[in-house]
Length: 203
Image 1 (tube, rainbow, N blue to C red):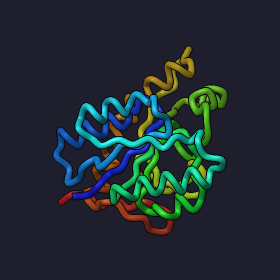
Image 2 (cartoon, rainbow, N blue to C red):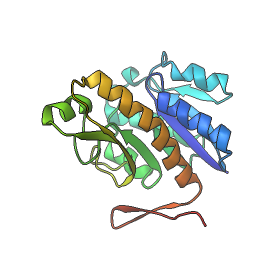
Image 3 (cartoon, rainbow, N blue to C red):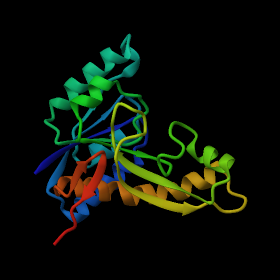
Image 4 (cartoon, rainbow, N blue to C red):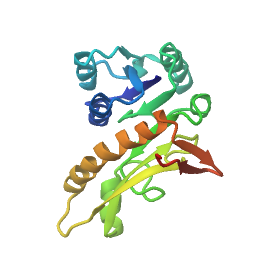
């Protein structure tokens, strides 16, 4: 039974998708905690309603990113995580923090990485004139939005699309691929070789 700790900053819709999939599919894992850097994050209420322990580490109370990351790491580690999942966690994490969880921290990014790292990905896609957009689940490394990719999903860019319309379609796919990636991890079906993810298919 693996312990999963999920980090959120807001409503945590990807966290919800993971919790619901775990409950429905009976993974060999449990959500040990949902942690936010914002006390008013709506996702904390969902977690509490599902009997999941929650914690808040307010980022604004720390003078530096290093101090915040150290405090966050202490709280995360109190739940003995096998996997840390970033689900709309709006903080750039320091290299020592990421290295502490190397090979066991996942993130979802709303683009087909390596395209459009950073923010405003949907507008970036529209400005670039691409015909296809999507989302990527990847292992987190010290380089922002550049870790080994676990799984991706694509959506077409349609005539007349706005960033908001594109975001809504991509989010539907995010809610499918993030639970899939987490399940593959907890079932020991993921490994990293030469900075690429290898997926072991079920027998």
